[in-house]
Image (cartoon, rainbow, N blue to C red; front, top):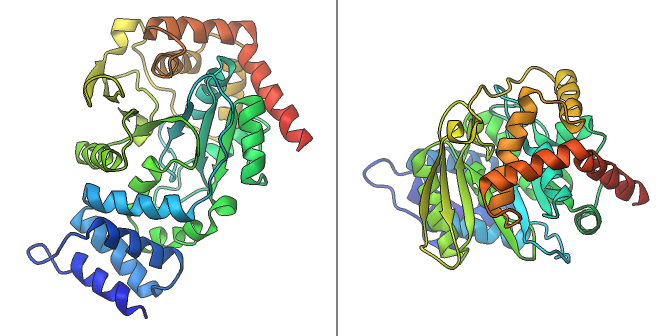
Length: 349
């Protein structure tokens, strides 16, 4: 048993009226002791559920991020005309709507914006479909690459993926606790703001509840991150919805520190239903049709989503211009060719 960890646990687990928030250094230490398995399983489980009930502070989240940046994998910087876009998605996946992440990443890459994603396999408590499974259906398996090989893919095909079980096994070892406590621990929020890339980048972060967005925003501010995007997206992802207004948070380097943007899809001719999730076989067929330029509901969702990120990534002057560029890339076959280029690069590795 770690006596040091026990003192940290006592602070967060003392109840509604007597608990204490951790300092940034204490939160960093607590997560480090868990990742290094110096805390016992009982202590780890107790901390994760108590910390969820208490709710993490931005300072605590900043401290946990300190530890992830210290102990986690680091993808080397690559040459690029645009900052690498980090499309963060909840690790426990999706179960109601078809994820747009892989196709959006391919569109951005075809337009010259590198994209780095990260995640693992099916993860409790939700156990929804993760991005890694959709990539496999597109003929891309990220699970065997080293971080240096991920950097090669990022440089040569403008796409990369950090795979938790291989690249960050210490973090993967904490996954079973999610099954046992039955709830997302604060680490799930940490994963949304973690950036394993060492060069210039732009974080795009999905969220569900407004208090989570506040924690994310303030924690990143403590880390000196001045430019990022938050999206109240589909199932907590950064995929823009089509059936409701998209609530966006914009942090910019050279303007006001925070700007709220409400995107009404009907104002852009994109109102409609989100493509429901069914199964991997159907998802593969639907994604392939979109790559072929078929004007189906998923294609419209990808154009809407990618148009926004092409604008946010600096490739298009307006969202409308980004949508038009996405449509052109799909119709010309450039997005499909980008997938083939990625496959060729990976075969060479």
